[in-house]
Length: 228
Figure 1: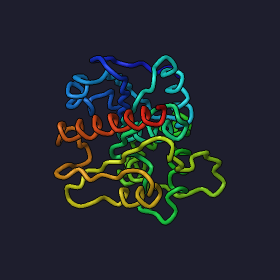
Figure 2: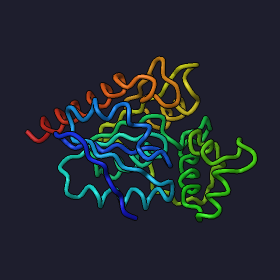
Figure 3: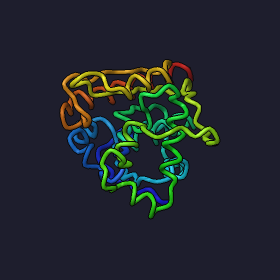
């Protein structure tokens, strides 16, 4: 699996991963704001196996020094995986897939990872079923799949070595997945984006850009302090 980037701007590298099938459109309102201070690399993440996608990302980033990452939707789930593997310096994750209002959030995330590893034909049937409540986009965004006790997922939620920020639109109230994410990852930074819905980049591009730029700048200061 190859990962192709569209590059804009100059400066420390910042990778933007869009949700499945969005081809970077979700990030478009903020790219110019970010590219004023960063070299922005936008990747179209095809919905598929999470481990394979993250491995492809790691290979694509081998030539970059201390890259940062921001992800949305399924791209957010990949960004979390990249942070856990330590292949990025920081991660900002906006409205990520894989967090449902469930009693076992780790099991829910493992189940979502399994869903993204389904064969292509079955995946297509899940993406566009006659019943929209059963659609995979719904499951992916809200984590509404049944946990599987025999899932061997390696994800542990241990992100202490990489600064991670999770941000959620709260127009209409804090969504259930945000509560689950806080319970699963209490040691990362959790932000509410006021006035934003499920695609905060479109609702408040300046706010989203500021969150990303602030988080990456803080991570760079921390890295320099530790190295010094």
